[in-house]
Image (cartoon, rainbow, N blue to C red; front, side, top):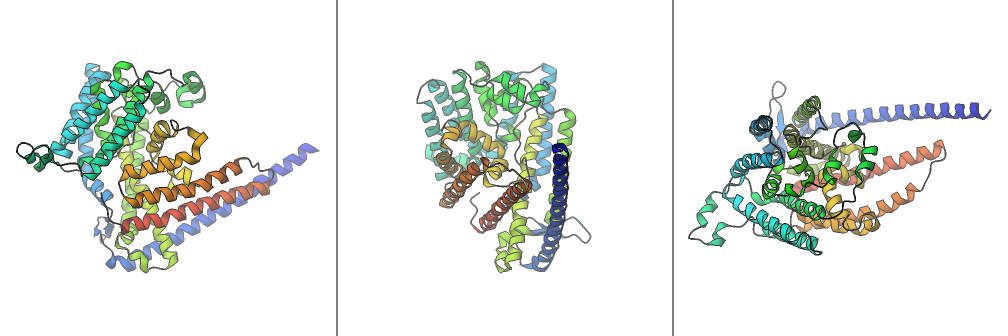
Length: 495
């Protein structure tokens, strides 16, 4: 009797779920048809008032292309030369590794040589500043790594240079003497070195911590991890085990350290990788992705690029934001533009980060994936920030969140972490105010999450209510991000 009753309840629940799913699908289809239709009309009616539109290449006659975003325009323009350079670099690296059976030491010299060519073109004579600061950091780590106050020294040193680099705009050679050094200011390259150095700072801190922990007993349970990890169970090495497993003490050499700091495929934009995982894969190339999977990864990236080209030729979301033309629109149209800008930004960073990660994979180095989930699938602030710049989030968890006390001090840690994230991006009050405002939103979200985790859905109605509340939370999250996305383009760009 109870069995038949349970079966009828189960069938009713399945039927209810199917009906709910069908209604959601119909809603999503209707929502996107409306947004696409209205976006096409807005782009057609207001294109003459928008800045940053260029003659495109799609359709006949060619439509205008939204090239108003500086980052995307520069990346798109330089994509052919970047593809050629990294294609040659990775081909040479793989040939030399196989021909001469190069391991960590040999590959570190080889990649350092290639990366020096690359950053010499980018920064010219300013590579002297990079190597001077990097060498000083290396000496500090090697001398004080076993001291109790080492982490304090490491942070003070790196934060000090992070601030000074920005305050003095990358320095001038004339400060070392006008007679002998000032002429080098005429050879500063094509890209400001102190902008890229923000990522180098993260790598210097990573090297310092990993070397510091290499002299301590490891708390990582490798056997337990292998039992739980489906990648490691299959005989491959996942990123986490490469990161947590200490490198051999000889791998913390100056050449490996320098090649890690300026590794060409990840130098400009990342993703961010820990020193341990880099040194390990420099010795033995990654085996997580097969050749077939790497090729498929590249094809998916090409599909994403085609989607971006279609998007920028049809919808001028970003041009509305940069031209401040959205201020003249109705609230519903502002919502659509804001939603479009969020998705444009997501796809832009998705393509930039995955291009450099793809190049790194070909070279045998696996870096963490940024943007592992679509921005529309983030139901709260926490999942949004974990997903958006996921490799930076992993870095923060490993080198800041856990050393600060982890989940035991979560409500306090987020203030320190987001303050660092703000000053790491740039020294501006607007970024600090953004960081602290995010923390204010985070605190109630964390409290609500802790309360809902204790809640157990007992019936179909409870489950339905819980899902709807999560959906509402996701809607609020995305909606709150829209004003930030639009208004950020109205502010002066310091990059």
